[in-house]
Structures are given as C-alpha cells and as structure tokens.
Length: 260
Image (tube, rainbow, N blue to C red; front, side):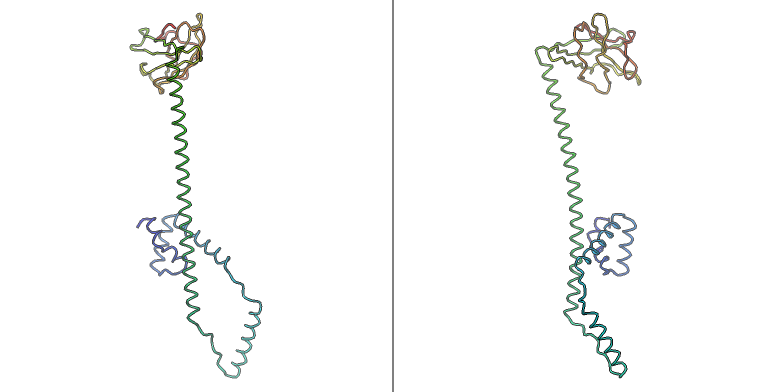
C-alpha cells in the first residue's frame, strides 16, 4: 500500500486515539519511519488533539475537593466499623458520553487532516497559477516584440542591406534592416555558417573609414537580431572575432560586407 492510500485508511486517527491493536500500531510506526510525511501528520494530529483538549477542558468545581475529602473521612470511619463502602455506579449515559467524545475527537482529527490537505492543494494551485501567469506574460512580451519587428521591417523608412561573402568563408550571407527614422537596426544571421567554439561573429559599420561596433552576433540566436543603429554608415561588415567580441575589427577575418 502506498503512502497516499495509507493516509486514507483512517489508521492514523485510530492510532492517535489509542484504538489500534498491536499489529495496526506496528503498521503505523513502520509507515512513520519510512515516510517523514506520515510522521509529520502524526505530530500535527497530536498537537491538534492537545489543543482541542486544552480548549475544551473543564475545571472541577471548588467544592469538589471538600466533598472528596469528606467522602474519604466517611470511608475511613466505615472501614473502622467493618461497614463496606459502596463504589460509584457506572451508568449507560457515562459510557455513551465517552463514546461520543471519542467520535467527536476522531471527526475533528479527520476534518483537520482534510483541511491541511486542502490547504496544500490550494498552495499547489496558486503556485501553478503564478507560473502560468508568468508564462503568459513572457509569451505576451515575445508577441509584442515580434509585432514591433514586423512593423519596422515593413516600415517605408526601412532599408534592407544585403551582405555578401568576401570569399573567405563560403556561403556567408546576411541581410540587415536599417531604419533611420526610428534609429533601429536588425540583422538576419540565419545564413551564416556555424563557427568553432571560442569564436563569434561581430557586425561593424564603416563611417568615413572608421569601423564602429554594432554588436556581437551570438550563434545561439539565429534569425533576426537587434543591433545598434549607426548614423551615416557607408557599409556594413561582418568579421570573425574571439568569443565576446573585440574592440577593433579583425580585418583579416572579414567574411561578409555590403554597401548601405
């Protein structure tokens, strides 16, 4: 029997109330040793039972002590004279009350466990709801970004720039999109060949003979990638650089370029 089915048998409640036989007690203890969750349930139920007992405890009346002491004195006197002292009579109502109390405590423990399980389920649902909301927000942000890119690509001020291979690396092709009105730029790196580990592509803008960094083109992000927009660029150039990029272009590793 697995842990969840065991918790539904009601043995824990009977064990806490002292109603299990020797075999059932051993079963409960074995499960408690094997599953920390079962031991935790036992501890919580015992604590709940203690709290219940404290909450509904009834203090004996003040005159009870004097009545008891008086009864003891009378019993001593009768024992001296050889008279038997009658014991208290047990009534059916007393047994019924005790049985009802046991049932009430058992029901309370059952409801307590049900409440604890419901609280755990609620916490789990709230956690999943939070994760779902976060995923929705990510998807929403990604969709908004795609819509913005689509709007830029179709904007009348957007100029496509095709970068062709220099012959250093076969099939090295890329297309950049420059929008001088919005000051944004994107490049599609989907056609660039894979590089060995430790190497990366980097995009440069040639402005009056000076190469200005437009961004490192990580190989993990294939497709459209946002890069820095550089005013007055005369051409765009892609070089192979060490991982992380360089401050100055490695001209010997210029693999593609295109005029703006």
